[in-house]
Length: 326
Image (cartoon, rainbow, N blue to C red; front, top):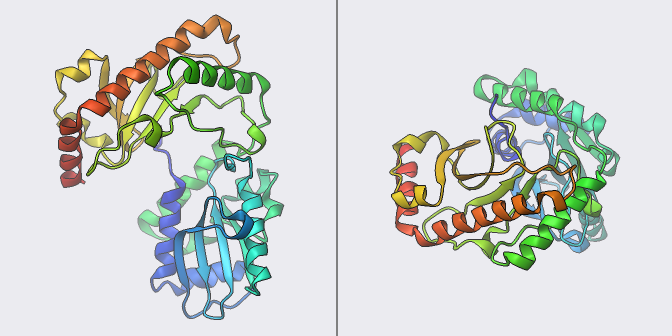
């Protein structure tokens, strides 16, 4: 199975070409906007939204010497997210553009994505410009070209916006209810989808890490999730993921306490996964028939949380070794 390409990787690729002397790249990008390539641009990542759209961040912000701004949302095959109040990403971009134009700033929103995504998403017309990855393939070389090609191939395999699925929505809501009532130390993230939609292929519960785990100093902030099933692994699981360390799992010392809670290490994408296998859950089946399995999954999450909170020295030794090996 090919490794997953993350939007952050494409953000970094485009930023690198914008920030350094890459006139062919700038010319190709600004041709999409119908203007000549400027001699220089100010391009930065993760700029905050403004005005009523201030929640969340803009993937790539471009400012021209004349003051004109382009606000880029980069997508590969992920759905548009929403704030806790249900405001979707396209609406946030519209509000930010309006806020800037109200201040007499010439501003435009841009959706950057593979052609398949631009054609499939129902929200592409919410943006002023749609720019396909494919426009840049012929001017890329080496690893950059291979990365962009892999992202395009990834988009070909997964539609960005399947129809909402009521059974999945009910299942997620029921699991969230059990978690908040019986396992209050495990705080699940709110639904990231606009209008509270869930989809048939939604099978992962994400934990709010700052509210669930101790954030140890000198250790990168982890991610934590519970998967109903994992098509790439023999079992469903709950796991905590530390960035960049997946390929070094065999070089890390495993304390007995890890085995005691039924956990082990394995790659989770490019991250290091601290994993406990859990029963498979089916979002399309009755929740009441699976409630014991749900409790077993959440109990495993509690064991994993407890181990993380109490084993800072082991975690720090892993973190330091990974940083040396990367």
